[in-house]
Structure formats: C-alpha cells, structure tokens
Length: 314
Image (cartoon, rainbow, N blue to C red; front, side):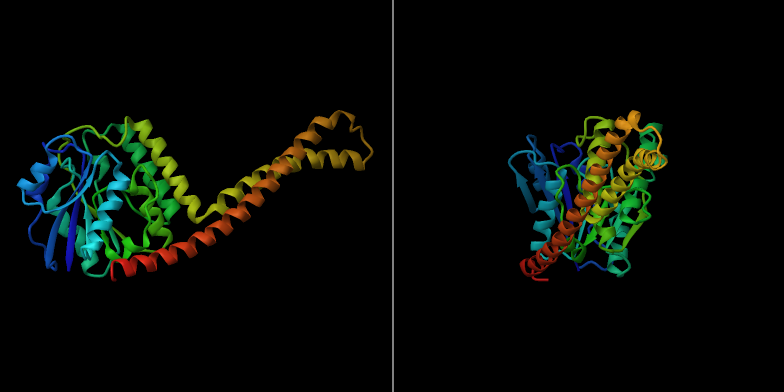
C-alpha cells in the first residue's frame, strides 16, 4: 500500500516546515509513504525548504495556475508513481497532519473511497458568525446536489483512493473541493467524514479575496457541476415556471373569448402569455438537448476512465 501526501504550495517557506515536520513517517497498513510538493509558481524559498526537509517528489508550475490545477497535476503525478491513496493537505499548516492516519484508515479497510476531514467550522475562533453560517449553507447545498451528508464539504484535508481518482475529472479553475464531492456523490462513490481540530490561523486565504468572492466562485462551481449530472432538473423547473406564467393570461383570454366577453383590452396579456409559452418550450427543448449532452459526457467519461487505467496500469 503506497500513500502519497500532496501539498499544494504558493510561497509557503514560513509555514511549510511545520507541515512537513508534523506529517507522520509511519501509518498502520501503509508500506510506502511519500510526500509530494506542488509548487504553484512560488517566488520565495518554498522549493529549497522542501528539499531541505527531505522531499524528493515535486510538481512545478512556472506561474500560478490555481488550486484546482495544482490538485489535478499532483494527482496525475501520484498515480503515475503507483499511489494507492492520495492525501491532500495545505501548505499553510491549517490542517493537523498527525490525523492523516485517520483519514486513510477507512480507505485501507475498504469502507470508503473518499474521506473528508470535518473541520467542525462552528468551533473555529477566527471564523466570523457570518462565515460559519455560509459554510453550513454551502455544505447543505453541496449535499443536496451530491445526495450526501457531509458536515464540511469545503474542507481540503481529504484522502482519495486511486480507484476514485480515476473516476473523477476536475474541470473547474477555482477549487476542486465542491466539484469532486458532487461528482463522487452522483457516481455513487462512498464518502466518509472524520472530525478534526484545525491548527491556529497562519495567514489569510490566497484562494479568494473575501467571503463574497468565495461564495460567488463556489456557487458557480456547484451549479456547473450539478448541471453536468442533472441538467433536466434545472430546465424542467424553468419550463414549468414559464408554463404557469403563460397559462394564467392565456386561459383567462380563452375563457373570456368562449363566453363572448370583451377581449379587446386583453391584448397585452395575450402577448405576455405567448412570450412565456415560447420561453417554456425553449426551456423544454434545452432540457432535452442538455440531457442528450449528459449522456454523451457519460460515454466519454467511461472512455477516459479506461484510458486512465491503461495509463496508470491499474
């Protein structure tokens, strides 16, 4: 059993030593434990610090590519090196690396495909009440989209089995956290959660400018991921909504016309109803097309999964 612990880094020379020193050197059930540093265009001494602490596996970006790309490139490297499990942590020492053994344990036992650390955000002191509430709402939305019951969907401290990583495809440019959960849930992968206590805050997040920027980016990633699997739900809802708006004025006009009432003052209602009826039909047509596209994507992902199995010799 080979485990790769990957650490995405962007100018982490100050905090990276604490991360590397707290990573366990032995884990029950693990034969090989490797550390991978993904340097996302750092301009400080991050690479020198990693080498000084014995790291021999690196993925280097010549410029900043973002967290999602760093995660994806790290996964590609780890799988190519024969990893059976890949653990993702952060270079800012936010997460307790001594709990890595608890993350991989359910996967080693065959009880889970993915294990996500629950940061218990309601207990984090530097999180404002507003941010805590947004974390709860965000996790609830992701759970609805993925049909899961995870307390902390935004946590980046997680472990993946190699088999689950072969089935997942990261396409977002922002963060892989929400997207991989929604994909895993809809692909019926087993996801477990392990409660942890985070370390003290070392710096502000570089992933987003403020909480509203994070909400906008996360919301966009959730919607895109959800549309990949259930586009018909969105378009069927729109078709029904516009259909109801069309039916009200059109039925009113039809009733007045049948009973011989005065319909001369109902031209505006007739036009509005016609426009809503067209919008409803367009939504229905887009729903059919998007569902056909979803079917095509499923077939393409099946092919990609087989290509990955050949590439990584699984």
